[in-house]
Image 1 (cartoon, rainbow, N blue to C red):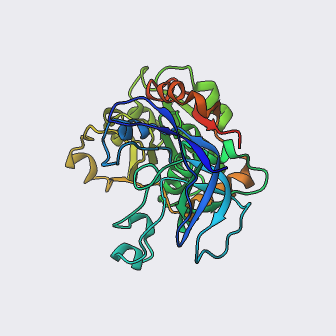
Image 2 (image 1 turned 90 degrees about the vertical axis):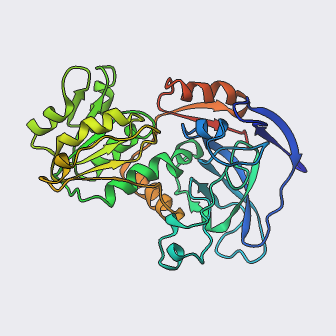
Image 3 (image 1 turned 30 degrees about the vertical axis):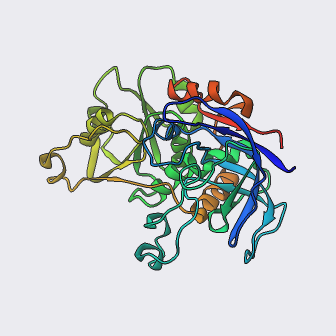
Length: 338
């Protein structure tokens, strides 16, 4: 093909419109990926509305699964036809202080698909080779795509936390991130508490591996967590700073509130809440390409899979609106037909 379809947004707050553009050629250290599936992340809402300094028209989409189509000069270790995923981590500079320390996710010049270069809402895109993660056999593109952002965010946060097998861990919010967080936590041997509004998701949470379910509208989740002994970790995936604030008192001593759900409002915490019990509140970014690969391998070994709504790329506006309206169950994934 000499041209590709791209779903573009031409100005902040605009709708997605399709355009035909020239097939991009990979430069040195880059590869071209034929996109097979791409997840719709809620963070796209901030991109669409100008929350990030992108160039317009913009092609978003940072949960990409596909196959390598062409290699740029100097790329080794990869071949055309390799199945790959690209997530929020879309490449690093290799020379800043963080990169020199091997801490690539905190690169001062971190690249993100859809922000620093065209993303996956297209038939093909060009990405740095450093952004590539291998997709294991038996993992479909639709299942692999969300692992590049939602999956690695919760998996990485849990495996780098202080929680150990048998510890009580709560997952706050059972949505695109949370439904994966429950599965990963259960497969890691943790005692899992799922927290959500209402009882609608109680049965699903149990099916995903939760040992307990708390309806946050029926009582104080923090009190309920303390009745269970206190949580070593609360994995905050809900996009509600108020809910995160309310969960702090549910932590055990040395407990951690791990924030992976992005919300613009401040989290409110008093020093008196964290000093006596040596509690902490901190954010956790998604993860490098190697972390995405680890996430996929662990998921392949244990059977963790996202629950997805599959739609063709042509329905991107409807799919995006379902995500913005919190109607998606639980990750919308667009397919290109490639």
